[in-house]
Length: 482
Image (cartoon, rainbow, N blue to C red; front, side):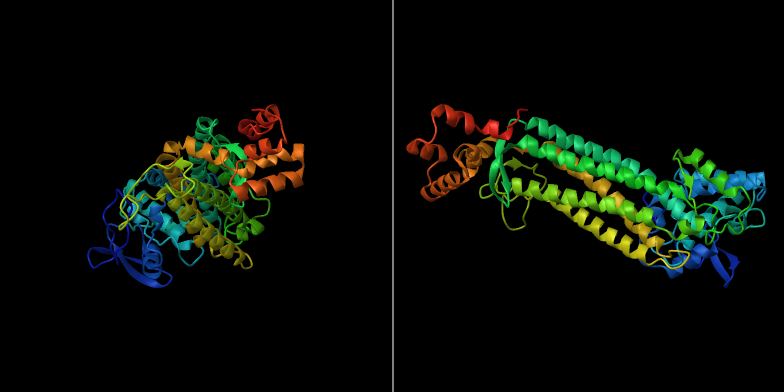
């Protein structure tokens, strides 16, 4: 059985006849490749879960987070007298290598798996144990000196380690996502300033409304995304409560006294995040609402971006038979049959990114409601969905900024033409002439093709000074001043 491998690692990792070592577990004996750092439980998982084709190694932050949790646990176990200092140092050294990006090819389990993430946890335990053995001067598989379960996983369960590692991964990834989103906001805001004097028609119901500026429109794009950044920051704070030391169901069975407080403190020091021990570990062990809330904020951001990208596509439609108010940068020929056609491919791909994120959020919601009694066994699909969403949103935001927003230009004349030939400016007459006379004036302008100003002059409704003051488009875009 071959599998995918991350970039920068060996081309593949195979479970094929060759040099092997024999390992034993509850179910019996199984051969493992002799040079593999993973062990028997990882090998079984590779057989059992050929699902998405995406190994956990393609999420290196997730692996690094597990390694950080294992370091904190090892130090707490050493302080509590559960493991020796030598074993602790071996675990820590092996885990630091993993944090630095080594041995990624050894993390071979499919990201979607049964068992509530036990296969992922054991993959980490086995790799750390076997690498620690080498660093301590022993052979792989010589578990007498450092054991995956009794030492690397001491005082732990998948049920507290997996959600803690996932929360740490999300917090780390969220920081990078927020930085990218802030750059996107800045790009929209820069365009807002660049276009602040470009007058255009605003539209409601896709019909002419009242004048505004292109700059106001792009500033609105910046603000709508900025609001979602605040939401993601709020959602991330829910991830700071962890259940380390709860072990299997939250009662703390097999964890020594004082372990929970120590492991949380060490995790704070190792990561820089202000983690706190959940108030009730039984409740926290089965609860996934932090993941649900954060995913919901990603969905909300996706909804906002869909609207923004739809607007960009409408504003750039044409170039001859659409709005053509802005020009999106030309990125590639748009058709295999129509010469000269260029499509808005960047907003299109961002729309698809957002659709996928909304679908992932549904998967997270379905998985969260599937919790039973003291555990939610569906956390692997929550991890796969949320981590994919963060990665896609980060990449999508960068793509939108670099390949689209920064190089948008305005069609000044086209925008002004729509203002000058729209009956939407009649709205400004309502306070002076009243709604009914203004409606009649607009209807006549549409029927005859005459301009509003022309009709006003014919009918003697306003003086030239009044016309200039009331119907001056810039005044309508900033009725209260800039």
